[in-house]
Amino acid sequence: MSPSKVSRRRFLQSALASAASVIPGVIPDARSSALAPRSDSDPSHPAHPGVLEEFGYGDVTLDSEPHEQQLKQTHDLLMSLSEDSLLKPFRQMVGQPAPGDDLGGWYQYDANNRDHVFDIGFAPGCTFGQWVSALARSYAINRSPETREKVLRLNRLYARTIGGDFYENTRFPAYSYDKLVCGLIDSHQYVGDPDAFAIMAETTKTVLPHMPPKAVEHGQSWRPNHPDESYTWDESYTISENLFLAYQRGAGEQYRDLGRRYLDDAYYDPLAEGRSNLEGRHAYSHVNSLCSAMQAYLTLGSEKHLKAATNGFDFVAAQSFATGGWGADETLRAPGSPEIYKSLTSTHSSFETPCGSYAHFKLTRYLLRVTRDSRYGDSMERVMYNTALGSLPLEADGRTYYYSDYNFKARKVYHKERWACCSGTLPQVAADYRINTYFRDARGVYVNLYIPSTVRWTQGGAQISLTQKSGYPYDSQVLFEVKASRVAEFAVSLRIPEWAAGASVSVNGKREAVLAGTFVSVWREWKSGDRIELELPLTARLEALDPQHAETVALLVGPVVLFAITDSEPKVTRAQLLAAKKTGPQRWQVETAGGAMKMLPFTAIGEEQYSTYLQVGQENSHGG
Image 1 (tube, rainbow, N blue to C red):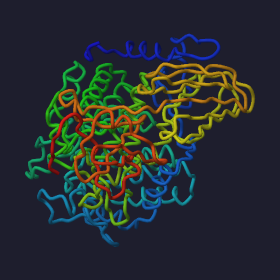
Image 2 (cartoon, one colour; image 1 turned 135 degrees about the vertical axis):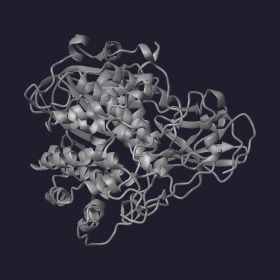
Image 3 (cartoon, one colour; image 1 turned 30 degrees about the horizontal axis):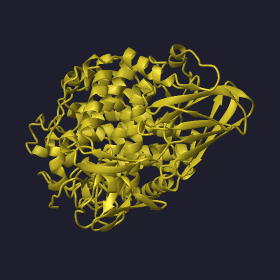
Image 4 (cartoon, rainbow, N blue to C red; image 1 turned 180 degrees about the vertical axis):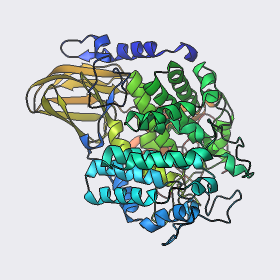
């Protein structure tokens, strides 16, 4: 089907057809299950009762060391930051006394930095709202009184600084406003800050005179008092998402109206018609803008914006690397562009990792909830294991892991500028693993990500918990155990990845083969002690960079890319790569003509030089 002819009805029909793989027991009516009534406690999609619901942050407990370590490390770092330092640029820019030390880097205000420079003062205070958001989400997880108190203090300290001079003096009025809205709506939702909406209303009244009247594209001049190019990089075309969420959470109709006003239809209209207009656009912000299109669908019921988001995702996926990352040098490309291949030698800035993964997770989460199409979960999982989860940790001095490097001669390194934008999104990414893992509808629970964890909910008056245990993605078996306060009938729907040929599901020892690339539903009466065993065969496979470069391949096992640890290009064949042997919990070895070559997943790479792609069937040499 042509992307331009995709409709919500067609998406639901397709999704329901795949969801209709149900074992064992009675197969429920697929149409009624998709349109089952939502819980009245969740107002996030009032016009769309068929949309899968998110669980709350506190409903899911993770038991995965790398996921939990990333959350703890980012949370502890944000808690340690001086509040005077956090408020300093806001106070300085509106002419208030500003005690405390500068954080430095992008976050610091430098009145002399009016030109296009990236080091000191590029985006003062830009990540404040994201950090408040991350702390609010962390509070919803850990219920630490200290975390809540810090959020409340920061909001009130910020409220005393609200002034138009901040927005006049910054390169990024819309960007900064967007992050502040995110922090305030999360403070309201997760911390219960009674003043959050009032602070947001004052912020909105103050910023609007300093905003363009509608979405302005990246690179277009609209501020005559600021002729420097960097003042054209604001992102008003991304802000509708959080404005619509503010409306959904009860902040008032003005946010729905503002969300509609700032929809970037010059970008969305061609995408909705199935025409790619991505070439040359800033990668992260334009993928993030697709999240605004999804929220336009969820809030306004706009089919056009749903089509724009689904088609936009497809165009991005077609130019993505095997890791799921995209946007080399922060630039999207035309379909079939040779620039993706050229980037393997021309740049080390391959994927803006924390920011890009944050946008990717949101977009795939929205698309999955609307369409129930398992491929969006596959994509989310790939990006999680091969990019975000392997990020270098955020450091207290502001050093940030910014780019994943897919060059033939690649390394993990910190960004040279401190407190860059990715220092704002990494803490949000770390909190959001929970809400990406499970979803629900009236029929039961959807398991999207396979992470050792437990989800708890109420089903028909029964208190239910579902616990998964595994060594996935390095072990093919995932075990689930049910606990229930009484016998309850519901469905457990499991994502079967498209790559998982030969997958099977066993319920209390009775095994059934299942189809890859679907959600399979296990519908029955459940009681405490019931067990599900999911087998996802982890077969090695090769993925070419693109159709034009079939000999440039990455080696994958399950959802995980294996990176060659090598200082020089090896001579290797397809057969040798596919015969890779596992030699440790997260280590593989490939026998080449030049000797054994170590292969590691992204999460296991430290300071080694690595290559994402290898050349097979020909001899080539590459520069770094």
